[in-house]
Image (cartoon, rainbow, N blue to C red; front, side):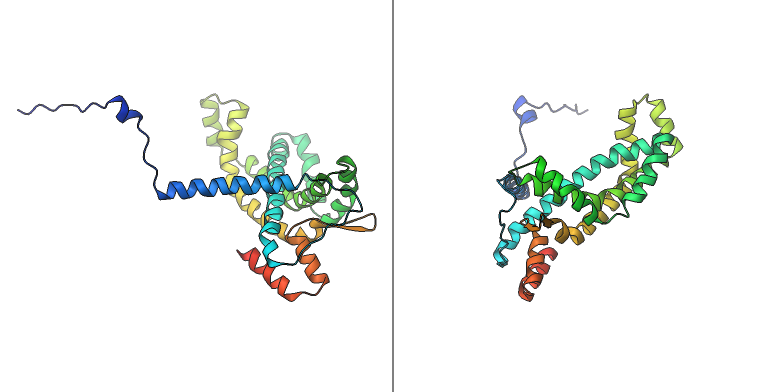
Length: 253
């Protein structure tokens, strides 16, 4: 009768790391490139700026990748802020009847206000708050994009948290999950499909308001932030059809 022997592993075999393949190297290069691009775009957002300073926008197609980076970075920052506000106020409205009576009607009212209405109110405040810095106009543009994204996300998350199935709530109680654990392990995963769908709708809708948010008028002066929106604004003002076709191709890419 044959005796089966159990194979034992040496320490080196157990702790040996797998050899990365070409896809791992490509993914690493993409991540590093993304981090470098985000760092470069963020650094450009905190430069010096004084009211009255002229910011020129070049209609050269070679500048479009840089302008696209700046616009996408603003949209991502606005989306991060929208997600944070959604988690706070959507959950608060879903779990508090008194908060629900205030937050939901207020969101219904605010989502009917045009983006230009928010921009005209807040741009001066941001410029004064960050005097001498590009952060003033940048924050005003990000806030304008934020107001185009956040309202439907709040309503979606509120409805999802309100409609969490009873069996999931019972499972949360059986495992003695705290409110914080229940939020991240039960409510957020349940609401995620609807939240992601509305986030995609918000991101697509943000492209519509790029021209308004990046070409800001204040104190009888137009501030043109580097981005796709200001590029479109200048191309329309100069009736440059070639530049408009170039920006359309860039947005598709």
